[in-house]
Amino acid sequence: MPSLTGRLEGAVSRNLLHVASQDSGSPKLEKQALGVWGHAGQFSELKLAVPWGHIAAKAWGSQQGPPVLCLHGWLDNANSFDRLIPLLSKDFHYVAMDFGGHGLSSHYSPGLPYYHQNFVSEVRRVAAALKWSRFSLIGHSFGGLVGGMEIENLLTYKRRNTEHTLQVEASKKPSKVVSQEAMLQGFLKNNSHVGEECGALLLQRGTTQVATGLVLNRDRRIAKIEHCLDFVSKELFEHYIRKLQARVLLIKATQGYHDVRRENDANTEPMLFKIGMLRAVLKERFQFVEVTGNHYVHMNQPQLVASVINSFLQSKERIPAQL
Image (cartoon, rainbow, N blue to C red):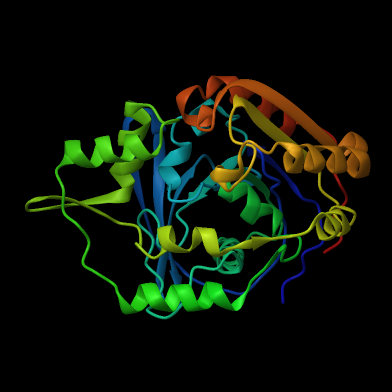
């Protein structure tokens, strides 16, 4: 098991905790190719070998710079950061990964469920492939949650999660082919906080062109299990926060969600509890910033969060590593 203590840095867009630093195993970096697309600027495409296939990622900046790993939200992909990273400091090396079953990454093998803990393991595999022993994290939404879990596993699971996943496996159907316009309009209907341009950007990496239209790249099992997850109690959250050695920046959009389960979003108490606990325990190591915008402010209006993240990453304050 890799060490999870050390200097931890990063930033979170929306309402979830992030960050981690560790050393881990040794998956291999298969290939790298340069690319340019839209607002993303120049980047490299990476393909990291894992037991079930590969994890795809995009990289910006010199590999000599301090590394920053970027984690996208649930059902999104690495293109989530295409409009933000070009506005961040060029002193850092940024890598945005596609979680398994998302974007251009391989789907999990049949029978292997998409547990949050598995996504944490993917972060470790990527860090090992890139030979990073210490790095910062930027996490959006679900990506912030996965980053926070790097300290310890912060979720518990019940049997019904596995049972539901197996039921989805048993009833697996072929991916539906739709037109480009229908795909975009369907995406925007289910993601009201995403503008048309940003929706097209996410679909650019999240779909594959076939003869009769587009199909989604992501594994359809992922969308089926979200409601089966059980999150930690306040007591457990407090326990792990007290072990945290990181500096933490949390950015909340004024119209962003308060709860990862959006049907519970009217209940702001859990979010207020998290902010209060982070302030009480981390003190000067915690920074909370609220910006105008919605859940996808880092895509729709990246300039509103870029300066905040830059100031945080470039801060001269450092937490001594204990690896």
